[in-house]
Image 1 (cartoon, rainbow, N blue to C red):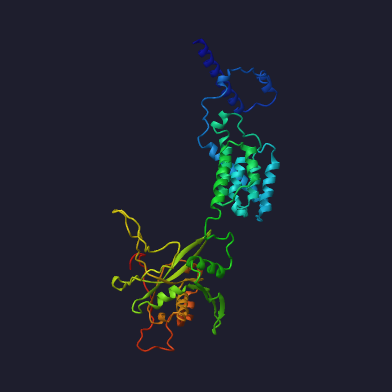
Image 2 (cartoon, helix red, strand yellow):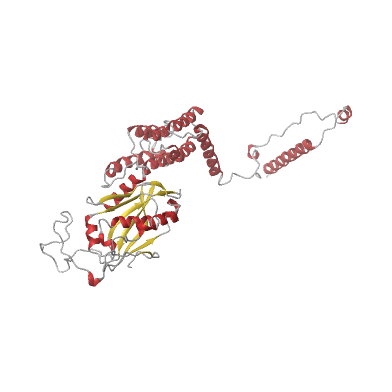
Length: 451
């Protein structure tokens, strides 16, 4: 009990001394010899009290906030982002990115803040165009200090030795996985030197090396890493990929060009590319002229990080009374037969038919891609299709266009509509008696279901 009272008195004396010193500092000092004679003990050194280490820290001071680590990490990330911006100076390339890594490595031997630097570098990689470079990922792994985070006993391995560093290494390997980058032997050597053979980044590396070779060439329709920059070549590649028919033919109806009218106005004509197979041409020839066909779109198609749009020429599904069941062609597919002619020993509960889901969708007669998705441009595509499909001159055509990229790609729709109106309507130079003319009308968009 006496010890606690003594400690309490020492604490009170310490607080009283601090408050007296604060008041003395705030009090103005007198000047002149008179002030020195009136207070001769002013320049004496006061003897301090030696308190216990228990009271070295004032308990009234607020403790560390919960989100202090997160704020410190965000501040460090901002500082490293500034480092990238200062060294890059507008020219962002692989050499500049490597220079930033060298500057950080030479700044401190102990590599303080290497985790925050690697996180900032992973975010900046797409801006510098090095997100698919394996050498850059290995250089980022080389930023880690060597043989520091390697566990030395089974207890350290069991309790996740240096979790922040291991999590950062796993994050780096996950970004490599997202971009489809396969690690090499240098990556493995670096991981062993940094984290050891029994660590989470090393296990992540082993999983990548097991699955990536299996799925590397599994896609039968691969997409190249570098897509064509020319919009015409990109449209040709996209239409060929959508059709998936070796007999389908891509037709260039119009190339992008500029034309000057008699009044001096400059008109920009967009590109128009279409694709149609012989089977689609036969279906269109058998179509009933009394039933309309529809031009629908735009429909998005993603090729890696590039989105393109296409349009289709289709019709409603035939009525039940008009459907004719055609016999299966046995040579249509040798790998997936549509009908089996031989009988096997079946039980009572065995089903003899195929489980095929029938969808009420209309036939698709043709597809196209255009630089502008307005009615005049698509009407020109329909008029060009009449050369190989004369039935379109007798079939009414309705447009179901969504307000999509046509407002972004085309700006002078009124001018193009005025100059292409002759292509939208059916040619009147050679009218056929007794046949209905093509009616081009625009119909409000309806659902994708049964029409």
